[in-house]
Image (cartoon, rainbow, N blue to C red; front, side, top):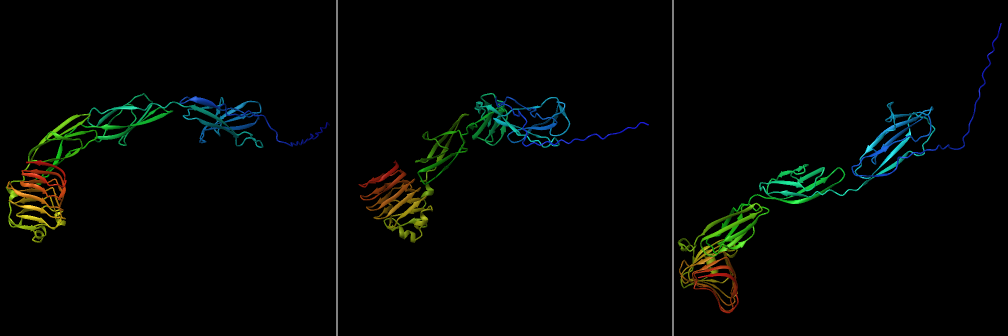
Amino acid sequence: MPFAFILPLPHFRIRSFIDQVELIPDNFSAGVDTTISCGQPATLVGGDYCMVSDLTILYTWTDEADNPLLVYRVRKNLDGSTDIFSGASGTDTLSAIPAVEVIPLLSTTYTLHREIAPGSASGLELCLTAGDLTITVEAIEPEDPDFTYDNSACNLEVSFNAISEHEVHYWDFDGLGSSTLADPVFTFPGTGVYTVSHIAGDSCVTAETEQEVLVLLPPDAGFDYDLTQCTGPFVVEAEVDADLAGNTYVWLFDGNSPQNTATATHTFYTPGEHKIKLTVTNACGTDAEEITIFIEDCTGTEACVCDSTNTIGEEGVTTKVSEAIEDSLLLPLIQANTTPQQVCIAGKLQLDQPYNFVNSTLRMLPGASIEVTDGITFGIVNSFLHGCDEMWRGIEVEAGGAIKTVVNTTIADAQYGVYFESGGGGTIDETRFLRNFVGIYQAQTPVLINTHLLR
Protein backbone atom coordinates (compact mmCIF):
# COMPACT_ATOMS: atom_id res chain seq x y z
CA MET A 1 0.00 0.00 0.00
CA PRO A 2 1.57 3.11 -1.12
CA PHE A 3 2.09 5.91 1.36
CA ALA A 4 2.23 9.52 0.68
CA PHE A 5 4.21 11.79 2.88
CA ILE A 6 3.31 15.53 3.00
CA LEU A 7 6.22 17.53 4.16
CA PRO A 8 5.62 21.04 5.50
CA LEU A 9 6.83 23.90 3.28
CA PRO A 10 9.59 25.98 4.73
CA HIS A 11 8.76 29.56 5.94
CA PHE A 12 11.18 32.43 5.56
CA ARG A 13 11.07 35.91 7.22
CA ILE A 14 13.21 38.70 5.77
CA ARG A 15 13.83 41.78 7.84
CA SER A 16 14.94 45.05 6.20
CA PHE A 17 16.37 48.04 7.95
CA ILE A 18 16.37 51.57 6.35
CA ASP A 19 18.48 54.04 8.22
CA GLN A 20 17.53 57.13 6.08
CA VAL A 21 14.56 58.57 4.09
CA GLU A 22 14.45 57.37 0.53
CA LEU A 23 14.03 60.26 -1.92
CA ILE A 24 12.33 59.55 -5.23
CA PRO A 25 13.05 61.94 -8.16
CA ASP A 26 10.10 64.30 -8.98
CA ASN A 27 9.53 66.88 -11.72
CA PHE A 28 6.46 68.60 -10.20
CA SER A 29 5.75 72.12 -11.61
CA ALA A 30 2.73 74.36 -12.21
CA GLY A 31 4.18 75.50 -15.52
CA VAL A 32 6.02 78.47 -16.97
CA ASP A 33 4.93 82.05 -16.23
CA THR A 34 3.42 83.78 -19.25
CA THR A 35 2.22 87.16 -20.51
CA ILE A 36 -1.04 87.77 -22.37
CA SER A 37 -3.09 90.72 -23.59
CA CYS A 38 -6.18 91.73 -21.70
CA GLY A 39 -9.12 89.64 -22.83
CA GLN A 40 -6.91 86.83 -24.17
CA PRO A 41 -7.59 83.36 -22.72
CA ALA A 42 -4.85 81.30 -21.03
CA THR A 43 -4.82 77.57 -20.28
CA LEU A 44 -3.84 76.03 -16.95
CA VAL A 45 -2.57 72.54 -17.75
CA GLY A 46 -2.33 69.89 -15.09
CA GLY A 47 -0.01 66.87 -15.17
CA ASP A 48 1.09 63.54 -13.69
CA TYR A 49 4.28 64.23 -11.80
CA CYS A 50 4.47 61.34 -9.35
CA MET A 51 6.88 58.42 -10.23
CA VAL A 52 5.50 56.03 -7.62
CA SER A 53 3.23 53.12 -8.63
CA ASP A 54 0.08 52.05 -6.82
CA LEU A 55 -0.44 55.63 -5.54
CA THR A 56 -3.29 58.13 -6.23
CA ILE A 57 -2.48 61.87 -6.28
CA LEU A 58 -5.17 64.60 -5.95
CA TYR A 59 -4.50 67.79 -7.99
CA THR A 60 -6.32 71.15 -7.56
CA TRP A 61 -5.89 74.45 -9.44
CA THR A 62 -6.88 77.57 -7.44
CA ASP A 63 -6.87 81.33 -8.01
CA GLU A 64 -5.49 84.00 -5.68
CA ALA A 65 -8.62 83.80 -3.52
CA ASP A 66 -8.18 80.01 -3.16
CA ASN A 67 -11.25 79.34 -5.26
CA PRO A 68 -10.94 75.86 -6.85
CA LEU A 69 -10.87 76.03 -10.64
CA LEU A 70 -10.09 72.40 -11.54
CA VAL A 71 -9.87 69.16 -9.48
CA TYR A 72 -8.72 65.73 -10.73
CA ARG A 73 -6.90 62.56 -9.58
CA VAL A 74 -4.15 60.47 -11.19
CA ARG A 75 -3.25 56.87 -10.23
CA LYS A 76 -0.19 54.89 -11.38
CA ASN A 77 -0.99 51.18 -11.56
CA LEU A 78 1.49 48.30 -10.96
CA ASP A 79 1.33 47.33 -14.62
CA GLY A 80 2.48 50.82 -15.64
CA SER A 81 -0.91 52.06 -16.82
CA THR A 82 -2.43 55.35 -15.64
CA ASP A 83 -6.00 56.10 -14.52
CA ILE A 84 -7.31 59.69 -14.53
CA PHE A 85 -10.42 60.55 -12.50
CA SER A 86 -12.52 63.70 -12.47
CA GLY A 87 -13.05 65.48 -9.15
CA ALA A 88 -11.83 64.72 -5.64
CA SER A 89 -13.84 61.51 -5.44
CA GLY A 90 -15.88 59.23 -7.66
CA THR A 91 -15.08 56.87 -10.50
CA ASP A 92 -15.64 59.09 -13.56
CA THR A 93 -12.56 58.61 -15.70
CA LEU A 94 -10.91 60.93 -18.19
CA SER A 95 -8.90 60.08 -21.25
CA ALA A 96 -6.25 62.72 -20.67
CA ILE A 97 -4.99 65.10 -18.05
CA PRO A 98 -7.62 67.92 -17.93
CA ALA A 99 -6.96 71.68 -18.34
CA VAL A 100 -8.91 74.81 -17.47
CA GLU A 101 -9.15 78.07 -19.47
CA VAL A 102 -8.99 81.42 -17.65
CA ILE A 103 -9.31 85.04 -18.85
CA PRO A 104 -7.77 87.23 -16.16
CA LEU A 105 -8.41 90.98 -16.42
CA LEU A 106 -5.45 91.73 -14.17
CA SER A 107 -2.14 89.99 -13.63
CA THR A 108 -2.93 86.92 -11.51
CA THR A 109 -1.02 84.08 -9.86
CA TYR A 110 -2.63 80.63 -10.01
CA THR A 111 -1.55 77.69 -7.81
CA LEU A 112 -1.48 73.98 -8.58
CA HIS A 113 -1.85 71.96 -5.37
CA ARG A 114 -1.23 68.20 -4.96
CA GLU A 115 -1.68 65.76 -2.14
CA ILE A 116 -1.91 61.99 -1.64
CA ALA A 117 -5.55 61.14 -2.13
CA PRO A 118 -7.39 59.82 0.93
CA GLY A 119 -7.35 56.01 1.04
CA SER A 120 -4.18 55.72 -1.03
CA ALA A 121 -0.89 54.29 0.24
CA SER A 122 0.33 55.63 3.50
CA GLY A 123 3.82 56.17 4.77
CA LEU A 124 4.73 58.40 1.84
CA GLU A 125 5.14 62.16 1.90
CA LEU A 126 5.38 64.65 -0.97
CA CYS A 127 8.23 67.11 -0.79
CA LEU A 128 6.49 69.69 -2.99
CA THR A 129 2.74 70.16 -2.49
CA ALA A 130 2.12 73.41 -4.44
CA GLY A 131 3.48 75.35 -7.39
CA ASP A 132 2.64 78.82 -8.69
CA LEU A 133 2.03 80.08 -12.22
CA THR A 134 1.81 83.82 -12.83
CA ILE A 135 -0.06 85.18 -15.84
CA THR A 136 0.85 88.82 -16.50
CA VAL A 137 -1.82 90.87 -18.26
CA GLU A 138 -0.44 93.64 -20.42
CA ALA A 139 -1.86 97.09 -19.65
CA ILE A 140 -4.18 98.60 -22.23
CA GLU A 141 -4.70 102.31 -22.79
CA PRO A 142 -8.02 103.43 -21.28
CA GLU A 143 -10.88 103.97 -23.66
CA ASP A 144 -11.93 107.54 -24.52
CA PRO A 145 -15.18 108.12 -22.62
CA ASP A 146 -15.76 111.68 -23.89
CA PHE A 147 -19.21 112.60 -25.17
CA THR A 148 -21.25 115.37 -26.71
CA TYR A 149 -24.80 116.41 -26.00
CA ASP A 150 -27.57 118.28 -27.80
CA ASN A 151 -30.18 120.29 -25.92
CA SER A 152 -31.41 122.28 -28.92
CA ALA A 153 -34.93 120.87 -28.53
CA CYS A 154 -35.34 123.28 -25.59
CA ASN A 155 -37.92 120.99 -23.96
CA LEU A 156 -35.83 119.42 -21.12
CA GLU A 157 -34.95 116.46 -23.40
CA VAL A 158 -31.22 116.09 -24.04
CA SER A 159 -29.53 113.69 -26.49
CA PHE A 160 -26.12 112.26 -25.57
CA ASN A 161 -23.55 110.75 -27.96
CA ALA A 162 -20.40 108.78 -27.08
CA ILE A 163 -17.50 109.99 -29.24
CA SER A 164 -15.93 106.51 -29.60
CA GLU A 165 -17.36 103.01 -29.94
CA HIS A 166 -17.18 100.84 -26.82
CA GLU A 167 -18.41 97.46 -25.64
CA VAL A 168 -19.59 98.87 -22.33
CA HIS A 169 -21.43 102.13 -21.55
CA TYR A 170 -22.83 103.42 -18.30
CA TRP A 171 -24.40 106.87 -17.99
CA ASP A 172 -25.41 108.59 -14.76
CA PHE A 173 -27.64 111.67 -15.10
CA ASP A 174 -26.88 113.49 -11.84
CA GLY A 175 -28.46 110.69 -9.81
CA LEU A 176 -31.81 111.15 -11.59
CA GLY A 177 -31.47 108.11 -13.84
CA SER A 178 -29.01 105.95 -15.79
CA SER A 179 -28.55 104.20 -19.12
CA THR A 180 -26.32 101.54 -20.72
CA LEU A 181 -26.98 102.69 -24.28
CA ALA A 182 -24.25 104.18 -26.42
CA ASP A 183 -26.35 107.25 -27.35
CA PRO A 184 -29.13 107.71 -24.79
CA VAL A 185 -31.80 110.40 -24.57
CA PHE A 186 -32.76 111.68 -21.11
CA THR A 187 -35.51 114.06 -20.00
CA PHE A 188 -34.56 116.21 -17.01
CA PRO A 189 -37.13 117.40 -14.46
CA GLY A 190 -36.42 121.09 -15.00
CA THR A 191 -33.95 123.67 -16.23
CA GLY A 192 -30.58 123.98 -14.57
CA VAL A 193 -27.04 122.67 -14.59
CA TYR A 194 -26.70 118.90 -14.12
CA THR A 195 -23.58 116.70 -13.76
CA VAL A 196 -23.61 113.82 -16.25
CA SER A 197 -20.98 111.06 -16.04
CA HIS A 198 -20.10 108.47 -18.69
CA ILE A 199 -18.14 105.24 -18.12
CA ALA A 200 -16.97 103.54 -21.31
CA GLY A 201 -14.69 100.63 -22.21
CA ASP A 202 -14.73 96.85 -22.44
CA SER A 203 -14.31 93.88 -20.13
CA CYS A 204 -10.64 94.74 -19.57
CA VAL A 205 -10.52 98.46 -18.98
CA THR A 206 -12.89 101.38 -18.59
CA ALA A 207 -12.53 105.14 -18.21
CA GLU A 208 -14.87 107.78 -16.85
CA THR A 209 -15.55 111.43 -17.59
CA GLU A 210 -18.20 113.92 -16.54
CA GLN A 211 -19.58 117.19 -17.83
CA GLU A 212 -21.79 119.98 -16.56
CA VAL A 213 -24.86 119.90 -18.82
CA LEU A 214 -27.01 123.02 -19.15
CA VAL A 215 -30.69 122.22 -19.65
CA LEU A 216 -32.77 125.08 -21.03
CA LEU A 217 -36.29 126.12 -21.91
CA PRO A 218 -37.21 129.02 -24.21
CA PRO A 219 -36.80 132.31 -22.29
CA ASP A 220 -39.75 134.01 -20.61
CA ALA A 221 -39.53 137.75 -19.96
CA GLY A 222 -42.43 137.89 -17.51
CA PHE A 223 -41.75 139.93 -14.37
CA ASP A 224 -43.37 141.54 -11.35
CA TYR A 225 -42.65 144.90 -9.77
CA ASP A 226 -43.32 146.83 -6.59
CA LEU A 227 -43.55 150.63 -6.50
CA THR A 228 -43.37 153.10 -3.62
CA GLN A 229 -45.99 155.76 -4.19
CA CYS A 230 -46.40 159.25 -2.79
CA THR A 231 -43.15 159.46 -0.86
CA GLY A 232 -40.84 160.34 -3.74
CA PRO A 233 -38.46 159.67 -5.25
CA PHE A 234 -40.39 156.75 -6.67
CA VAL A 235 -38.49 153.48 -6.25
CA VAL A 236 -39.39 150.52 -8.46
CA GLU A 237 -38.21 147.03 -7.54
CA ALA A 238 -38.64 144.54 -10.40
CA GLU A 239 -37.98 140.79 -10.44
CA VAL A 240 -38.23 138.12 -13.15
CA ASP A 241 -40.90 135.47 -12.71
CA ALA A 242 -38.29 132.70 -12.95
CA ASP A 243 -34.53 133.12 -12.64
CA LEU A 244 -33.24 130.17 -14.69
CA ALA A 245 -29.72 128.95 -15.41
CA GLY A 246 -28.40 130.05 -18.78
CA ASN A 247 -30.51 133.22 -18.95
CA THR A 248 -29.10 136.71 -19.39
CA TYR A 249 -31.18 139.78 -18.52
CA VAL A 250 -31.35 143.38 -19.69
CA TRP A 251 -33.65 145.81 -17.87
CA LEU A 252 -34.41 149.26 -19.30
CA PHE A 253 -36.24 152.01 -17.46
CA ASP A 254 -37.65 154.61 -19.86
CA GLY A 255 -35.12 153.20 -22.35
CA ASN A 256 -32.14 153.93 -20.12
CA SER A 257 -30.30 152.73 -17.00
CA PRO A 258 -29.64 149.14 -18.17
CA GLN A 259 -29.26 146.50 -15.47
CA ASN A 260 -28.24 142.88 -16.04
CA THR A 261 -29.45 140.91 -13.03
CA ALA A 262 -32.59 138.88 -12.32
CA THR A 263 -33.79 141.65 -10.00
CA ALA A 264 -33.47 145.36 -10.62
CA THR A 265 -34.11 148.54 -8.66
CA HIS A 266 -34.65 151.93 -10.26
CA THR A 267 -35.70 155.34 -8.99
CA PHE A 268 -38.03 157.59 -11.01
CA TYR A 269 -37.98 161.23 -10.00
CA THR A 270 -41.20 162.43 -11.63
CA PRO A 271 -44.77 161.19 -11.44
CA GLY A 272 -46.68 160.08 -14.52
CA GLU A 273 -46.11 157.31 -17.05
CA HIS A 274 -42.86 155.34 -17.13
CA LYS A 275 -41.79 152.30 -19.13
CA ILE A 276 -40.07 149.17 -17.82
CA LYS A 277 -38.68 146.70 -20.35
CA LEU A 278 -37.06 143.29 -19.72
CA THR A 279 -35.24 141.27 -22.38
CA VAL A 280 -34.29 137.66 -21.57
CA THR A 281 -31.88 135.69 -23.77
CA ASN A 282 -30.51 132.16 -23.69
CA ALA A 283 -29.38 129.53 -26.19
CA CYS A 284 -33.02 128.82 -27.03
CA GLY A 285 -33.81 132.37 -28.13
CA THR A 286 -34.88 135.80 -26.89
CA ASP A 287 -38.06 137.10 -25.28
CA ALA A 288 -38.96 140.67 -24.29
CA GLU A 289 -41.73 142.31 -22.33
CA GLU A 290 -42.42 146.02 -21.85
CA ILE A 291 -45.01 147.56 -19.56
CA THR A 292 -46.10 151.10 -18.74
CA ILE A 293 -46.59 152.07 -15.11
CA PHE A 294 -48.27 155.18 -13.76
CA ILE A 295 -46.89 157.02 -10.75
CA GLU A 296 -49.40 159.20 -8.96
CA ASP A 297 -48.70 162.86 -8.30
CA CYS A 298 -48.84 163.00 -4.52
CA THR A 299 -49.41 166.76 -4.44
CA GLY A 300 -53.09 166.26 -5.10
CA THR A 301 -55.98 167.52 -2.96
CA GLU A 302 -56.08 164.51 -0.64
CA ALA A 303 -52.52 165.11 0.51
CA CYS A 304 -53.32 168.74 1.34
CA VAL A 305 -56.06 168.26 3.94
CA CYS A 306 -55.04 169.77 7.28
CA ASP A 307 -57.06 170.11 10.47
CA SER A 308 -56.57 170.47 14.22
CA THR A 309 -55.76 166.77 14.62
CA ASN A 310 -52.70 166.85 12.36
CA THR A 311 -51.50 170.50 12.32
CA ILE A 312 -48.44 171.51 14.32
CA GLY A 313 -48.13 175.20 15.37
CA GLU A 314 -49.67 178.27 13.78
CA GLU A 315 -48.60 180.92 11.33
CA GLY A 316 -45.88 183.23 12.66
CA VAL A 317 -45.28 181.12 15.79
CA THR A 318 -42.32 178.88 16.66
CA THR A 319 -43.20 175.39 17.95
CA LYS A 320 -40.53 173.12 19.36
CA VAL A 321 -40.41 169.41 18.52
CA SER A 322 -40.54 168.55 22.22
CA GLU A 323 -43.81 170.55 22.53
CA ALA A 324 -45.34 168.78 19.51
CA ILE A 325 -44.45 165.41 21.03
CA GLU A 326 -45.95 166.48 24.37
CA ASP A 327 -49.18 167.52 22.56
CA SER A 328 -49.22 164.10 20.75
CA LEU A 329 -48.93 165.77 17.36
CA LEU A 330 -45.59 164.03 16.74
CA LEU A 331 -44.49 160.57 17.78
CA PRO A 332 -41.57 160.15 20.19
CA LEU A 333 -38.27 159.62 18.36
CA ILE A 334 -38.10 155.84 18.95
CA GLN A 335 -41.51 155.35 17.32
CA ALA A 336 -40.84 157.95 14.63
CA ASN A 337 -37.84 155.93 13.44
CA THR A 338 -40.13 153.12 12.28
CA THR A 339 -43.66 154.57 11.99
CA PRO A 340 -44.94 156.74 9.08
CA GLN A 341 -46.53 160.10 10.01
CA GLN A 342 -48.80 162.49 8.07
CA VAL A 343 -48.76 165.99 9.52
CA CYS A 344 -49.22 169.61 8.54
CA ILE A 345 -46.80 172.27 9.78
CA ALA A 346 -47.71 175.93 10.29
CA GLY A 347 -45.21 178.58 11.34
CA LYS A 348 -41.74 177.34 12.35
CA LEU A 349 -41.03 173.80 13.65
CA GLN A 350 -37.84 174.12 15.65
CA LEU A 351 -35.76 171.00 16.40
CA ASP A 352 -34.66 171.34 20.01
CA GLN A 353 -33.78 167.63 20.03
CA PRO A 354 -32.68 165.13 17.36
CA TYR A 355 -35.60 163.90 15.27
CA ASN A 356 -36.34 161.80 12.16
CA PHE A 357 -39.20 161.44 9.72
CA VAL A 358 -39.38 158.01 8.02
CA ASN A 359 -41.89 157.08 5.27
CA SER A 360 -43.82 160.23 6.15
CA THR A 361 -45.73 163.03 4.40
CA LEU A 362 -45.34 166.62 5.64
CA ARG A 363 -47.73 169.30 4.27
CA MET A 364 -45.98 172.63 4.78
CA LEU A 365 -48.44 175.51 5.04
CA PRO A 366 -47.59 178.88 3.41
CA GLY A 367 -44.59 180.48 5.08
CA ALA A 368 -43.84 177.41 7.23
CA SER A 369 -40.28 176.25 7.88
CA ILE A 370 -38.23 173.64 9.74
CA GLU A 371 -35.26 174.92 11.74
CA VAL A 372 -32.32 172.66 12.72
CA THR A 373 -30.54 174.36 15.59
CA ASP A 374 -26.94 174.22 16.85
CA GLY A 375 -25.92 170.71 18.01
CA ILE A 376 -29.08 169.04 16.67
CA THR A 377 -29.33 166.43 13.87
CA PHE A 378 -32.32 165.92 11.57
CA GLY A 379 -33.04 162.87 9.38
CA ILE A 380 -35.60 162.44 6.58
CA VAL A 381 -35.92 159.04 4.89
CA ASN A 382 -38.38 157.99 2.14
CA SER A 383 -40.56 161.01 2.84
CA PHE A 384 -42.42 163.78 0.98
CA LEU A 385 -42.37 167.45 2.02
CA HIS A 386 -44.58 169.76 -0.07
CA GLY A 387 -46.72 172.89 0.01
CA CYS A 388 -49.60 171.83 -2.27
CA ASP A 389 -48.40 174.30 -4.89
CA GLU A 390 -48.06 177.07 -2.27
CA MET A 391 -44.61 178.26 -1.25
CA TRP A 392 -43.15 177.53 2.18
CA ARG A 393 -39.82 178.79 3.42
CA GLY A 394 -37.86 175.49 3.53
CA ILE A 395 -35.49 173.63 5.89
CA GLU A 396 -32.99 175.96 7.57
CA VAL A 397 -29.80 174.43 9.00
CA GLU A 398 -28.13 176.79 11.44
CA ALA A 399 -24.43 176.84 12.30
CA GLY A 400 -23.63 173.72 14.29
CA GLY A 401 -26.82 171.97 13.13
CA ALA A 402 -26.76 169.07 10.71
CA ILE A 403 -29.01 167.14 8.43
CA LYS A 404 -27.84 163.67 9.34
CA THR A 405 -29.22 162.22 6.14
CA VAL A 406 -31.89 162.96 3.58
CA VAL A 407 -32.47 159.78 1.54
CA ASN A 408 -35.05 158.93 -1.15
CA THR A 409 -37.10 162.00 -0.33
CA THR A 410 -38.96 164.65 -2.33
CA ILE A 411 -38.81 168.28 -1.21
CA ALA A 412 -41.23 170.44 -3.19
CA ASP A 413 -42.70 173.98 -3.32
CA ALA A 414 -40.12 175.69 -1.05
CA GLN A 415 -38.33 179.03 -1.45
CA TYR A 416 -35.15 177.20 -0.40
CA GLY A 417 -35.48 173.43 -0.30
CA VAL A 418 -32.55 173.21 2.15
CA TYR A 419 -30.76 176.35 3.33
CA PHE A 420 -27.37 175.71 4.94
CA GLU A 421 -26.09 178.65 6.95
CA SER A 422 -22.34 178.99 7.34
CA GLY A 423 -21.28 176.21 9.73
CA GLY A 424 -24.31 174.03 9.00
CA GLY A 425 -23.80 170.70 7.24
CA GLY A 426 -25.21 167.33 6.33
CA THR A 427 -25.68 164.59 3.72
CA ILE A 428 -28.30 164.53 0.97
CA ASP A 429 -28.59 161.37 -1.13
CA GLU A 430 -30.96 160.35 -3.95
CA THR A 431 -33.39 163.17 -3.21
CA ARG A 432 -35.73 164.96 -5.60
CA PHE A 433 -36.13 168.74 -5.41
CA LEU A 434 -39.32 169.74 -7.24
CA ARG A 435 -40.80 173.20 -7.97
CA ASN A 436 -38.49 174.92 -5.48
CA PHE A 437 -37.26 178.48 -6.09
CA VAL A 438 -33.81 177.29 -4.94
CA GLY A 439 -33.17 173.60 -4.38
CA ILE A 440 -30.11 173.78 -2.11
CA TYR A 441 -28.46 176.92 -0.81
CA GLN A 442 -25.04 176.45 0.67
CA ALA A 443 -23.26 179.34 2.36
CA GLN A 444 -19.75 177.99 2.90
CA THR A 445 -19.65 174.54 4.49
CA PRO A 446 -19.36 171.73 1.89
CA VAL A 447 -22.31 169.34 1.92
CA LEU A 448 -22.21 165.77 0.57
CA ILE A 449 -24.86 165.72 -2.17
CA ASN A 450 -26.09 163.04 -4.59
CA THR A 451 -29.43 164.28 -5.76
CA HIS A 452 -31.73 165.47 -8.55
CA LEU A 453 -32.76 169.11 -8.82
CA LEU A 454 -36.02 169.58 -10.71
CA ARG A 455 -37.53 173.04 -11.01
